[in-house]
Length: 191
Image: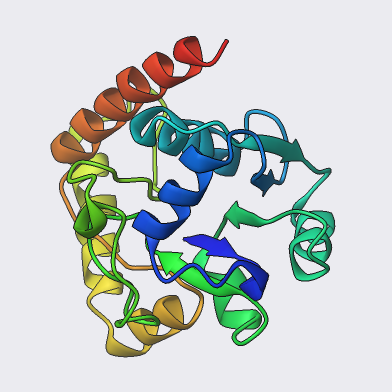
């Protein structure tokens, strides 16, 4: 999510971008460290929006949280759990995935606010060593799909800001390759 300290009173991403364009370098965004997903997401946002914002890296999420809540930095690209745990103390301007968060159904996505292909999602996946027999991979995939179909498991994931996605090993392999290519481009653009 793209969250900001409420002192700015930005109504949405467009207002943030308008302010950033009128005040280059005046806004800052925190991350849990150089090269973290929050950092790279922020750089991707800056490139797409054509704005100059200062990146302030911290040594982990705890220090980053303290800095945002204390208004030492203006905002952060962060996990939705950050916004869940700090409701009222930060303003969630946008969800960075293509779909709205079940925890924040009223918070629009960055894509809805003018950047249609902006999609930054943290994901977790199961992998096996190269050469694992196909029948074992298929069994683990089937068992995983069954586990993700469990209502209680899904509810626990939602509470933690996670949205379960069940797909095949082949689809997952293509997604990994696409992510690799995308983030490599962003990393080279900000070097």
